Length: 140
Image (cartoon, rainbow, N blue to C red; front, top):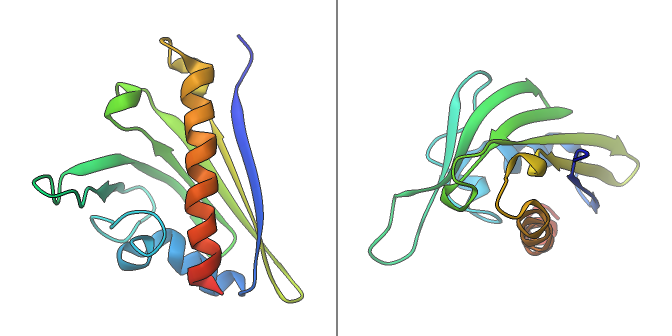
């Protein structure tokens, strides 16, 4: 099977230095995605936490930060229970342009999920759209 990847590009009305904070700072991740366990650090583990009643503080998704080049590039692994701990990879690139930032996410590795790689990628494709709608609001 060929490599499956989600590619999303959005335009944000804020400079890369501002957008970067919303990708790596735990409290700012909470404003558009989910609360971070801690700020992301190169080479470190990261996790986002559940806020559902009775499950508060449990890990929702997690991975390892592979590369950080502030404020231009972030690469980390990504998994969660529904992926049965199969690791995918997210690569975020931020390009400063007049008036804001072009943010691109490449989320790949879906072919490694044997049960239903297309279905799992399609679900995450929709999920990223929902999260990016909130990211536009909080960064602008």
